[in-house]
Length: 388
Image (cartoon, rainbow, N blue to C red; front, side, top):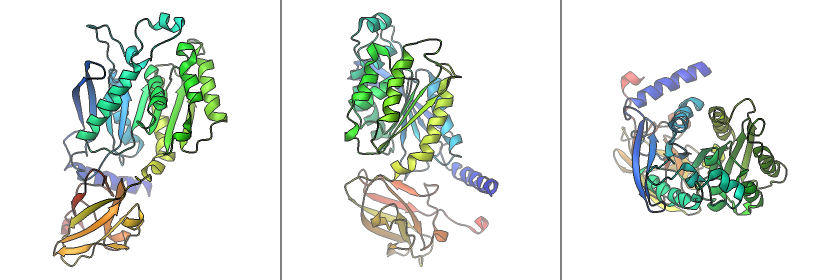
């Protein structure tokens, strides 16, 4: 049965991709950053079906340290394989390259101002700009992505080493920026374990939405970087023993057979699999507090069709396929005015799930953001005799 379903899905995917953009796209975009007073480059991956799924919105994964393209490329490539091709994300690579002209390195971006002499000696002048880098991400990069792409509201941050430390620092400084944090081999030890102390001392009671926090380490602290082990154990102990915020799911993983560099692919794979198995549905069910009035129209093929809309909230029938009937506004158009919350997920049916309609611009259900757009028009996929 699984083989048959996989075969059918593969045929369906191939059919729809025939109408999509020719290849998955990676754009290089330059931003003149006010926060950093520098020009920066970001990478933006849109999946092969992005242009075709014009009525849908996508969650975004932000991959730090993407001046190393392998981090960005591996992340954007693996999602489809881990989900059998049925989930798509926009992936944004945030780069921290060395700027020889001004002698500015990634560590300037990722480290706050260091207080201890030991840390200043180790990192030299390459530190102290983490707050401005966070402003660049939160006030310039994320708004650019939201303004130019169809995005949902659950952003995921992926970081490795000091960029993993940075995304945890962002949790403390701006907890609403990301919903999910995949921190692979973060350095908790720098500057007299300041990050570890901040994470343990942070007031998590203000976090009201579902968040996912993945922490991992490789063989750091065993044969090298001895100070890493006691620092991370303090963080692990806090989240494992005394942490009681039910909104934050923490997953801690160990990879002692891997070194600091090659732990990234195996850790990221485990983190993403855990997210899809345990977190993504809970986040997807979270709705905005406010109701927005929208007008939804669909063009049908038969003037006698009776069409229903069914979705993820009471005003959409709570997934009852025959509860919310649309109004016949003309021979081949059905419409409805609704007050709904964002994001709204729904399907069109003729009264039962067996009669669910396939809509141009989507594989399965439609996802919309009423708070950003209030007029929607859909069209059925044309069915011919050959399709039967």
